[in-house]
Length: 304
Image (cartoon, rainbow, N blue to C red; front, side):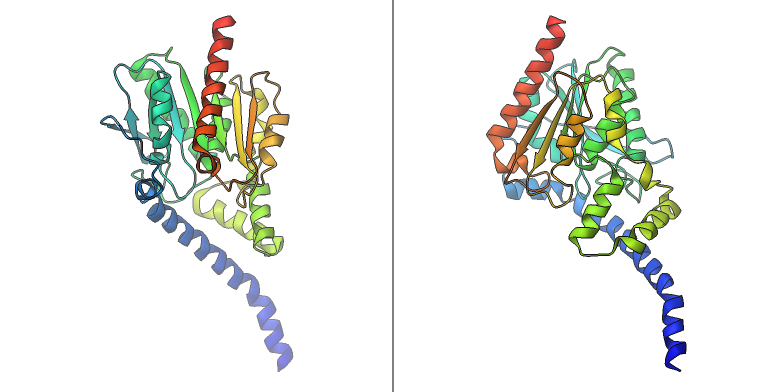
């Protein structure tokens, strides 16, 4: 009798794990939506809102698969140069508000986009940069159609948004620069890192998560590999990482830099910062790094 119970347990264990993985992914999707709409509240609590923010314009586009995507345009006067900001998981485009004073000072308009399944954008599941890369392509196309094909466009992203920016820059040689804060090399390696941190077995969880993501939203986890594409990007890149990052291994930014061969690339690390935490670990130092990087990129273009 005990043998039959053991046999039944062994047979049904994969089913139980599959159900648990499915429910976990669905719960994460609901949490992403819930937490992303609270981004502005978090900024207020942290004291990260700029003292002066101009009235923003709400802009919307349609994704390739029919979702309405929303963004906020910040600009003082005509848009002559643009930075498109892409956020991380559980956040929204409002995460880019602290950087508005810097970009305004340097003559850039700022487009804060809500990723699919986040903020005011439609969609249910996040694909950590895979379909978001196509969404970003549509935002860039929108900007060029509205303000001219020659509009200088640059990208800034955090975590998932950094992966999205790197992936897109690899196929658009006109992007001027990329700021990648807490970006990752491969989605597979990030998930394996997080499973290790949770003391969870890679087998069978990794395979089940990958299969369920494909079944739910046609997201091929193993095919999201920014490190394999960034060498094709013409834009200079600033990589930013925190030494205490427990979401993305801190060394990934250095590996991304190593995969590149652009003389204007830079790496900025803060040993005591957590995931997407370098700005909060030292606001002035962070903004100084961004300003110096952008000025160097602009000087190279003028000289070249």
